[in-house]
Amino acid sequence: MKAIRLFMISVLVLATWACTGSKTGNVYTQMEEQTSTTKEQSFSKAVYEIAVRVVKDGMKEDFVRERSAFISALTAEEGVSNDREFQSFYALPAPDEREVFIGMTQYASAKTLEKVQGNIYEKFLPFAKTMDLKAYVFVQPIEGGDFELKNLAAQSGQVLEVAVRRVKEGQENAFQSTRKEFVDWLNAQEGVKGSWEFKVISGQDTERLTVGMSVYENKEKFMAISAQVQQLEAARKYFATFDPVALQYAVSISNQ
Image (cartoon, rainbow, N blue to C red):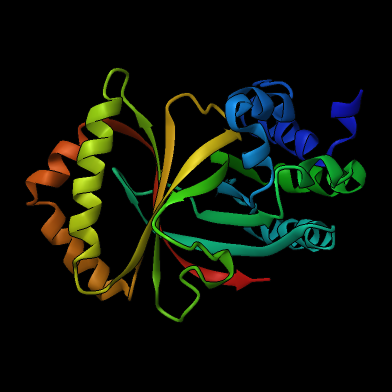
């Protein structure tokens, strides 16, 4: 079958099986269905993969080794660029019990997913055995201005916030209005370098899933703003509209 030959289909299916035990089916088919009304527009724009990975107990060295081998193979493929790796140091609503790393990769377009062949999926199998997935999505930016993955929180000390959230059923309108109010407030704070919102076009368990990112100048500015957020009414209303899937605060450790 064509789906079996496609690398990204293979990666998502294998990752889902290896890390969650569920079988979600053909990712490319899901992407076509979810973007049917704007198919050509979506397929011509860059796509960003976000993988929030939890390292399995006692497998940190294996994780690092297999990640390096897999990323080297992945970034050698045509149309794949700007692979980034971030290490999470803080999470909401509770600290992570195991180490969490966030991988992001840029694809020239959704059509690239058709072209990247399954000749490297075998490299992924050993990597998959070292981790569990907290979140796994393909996204495209829709708000916040120009988005450049290669420059995202790339300066020393900068903090990246990655918010993968599931909007509560029936709260879609409230989420959008409260989110915009909160983000406007956030972007006005000293030490915030920018914020972006993304649409999820495919991935693992994507129903009502949304993704946002913000960059802070450093950990000190991030912690000061976080203290203000705890007292902010706009934040309380916003947080009430969604359930957190992965709310991670991280620093860059690799930029390819």
